[in-house]
Length: 352
Ligand code: GLY
View 1 (cartoon, rainbow, N blue to C red):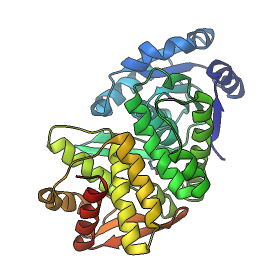
View 2: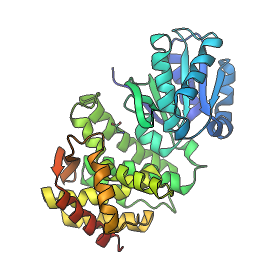
View 3: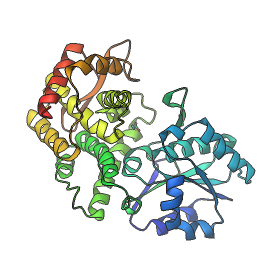
């Protein structure tokens, strides 16, 4: 069954509607310490009317771990959750990933609803059924594919977020725009972070989430086409790891935004992707995200990181690239020489 996704600016009303449509005996609400403080009060009346039990875990990706997970399982078990109970995950990707996994495994699976509170989770993590936790030093090492009964997406919880958080999520929207086609992509390049209307952002968000939804409907378990969603991520993850090793972490979406510049260069070199679109995208990123500094001394580390990316096989670097906006090619291999050339061009485009 297709996942129910509601786009709304009346989150209370939509949540009431969702709760009416689901048959459950007890309601649980999972938040982290931030969303418990800033977002849960906005829905307090709905939660109160349903006599909800609140579960709050520490915030941040480092807490997307087995300790937080056991905390959720224990709280569910100690407060009378049964197979007919419902868990609402109210938070960013950390909460929706961990909460989705807790719900999918408690008593072999209870139902859950995601209410993403960051743009990044609204456009990506909360939709599409990937759940899990980090384990043994590896991100998302343990998890299952299982979709939420419903996802309620609203720009209301986003108002209080710093602009950096909006930009981080917007990078995944740019990715969806590149996957969808020129009209969607051009609308995104016209976005003004300093002066935007939340209704306009909600429309763009809906168009963007639908791109992911269409891909996930065809390939829910990432056997093929879903790898298209990795555009920008092979280089993006390498940038994130390099930044971490410099003890100066960068937001995931920024890493993807910069990673996509390099991967569009690779698309141009390997698949003749239009250089005019590449230049327009690079300019938008430079103007709105600044640059991620690298020198040629960083190339060996970056290449080693790309070779160890989850998607790469036997030491070959593997990318999802574009031959045109809207035309993705998955499983493209690239030699070290061509990746180095792409990194050189990235530095030129970013004026480094
Ligand atoms: N974040 C990419 C995916 O859900 O497949």
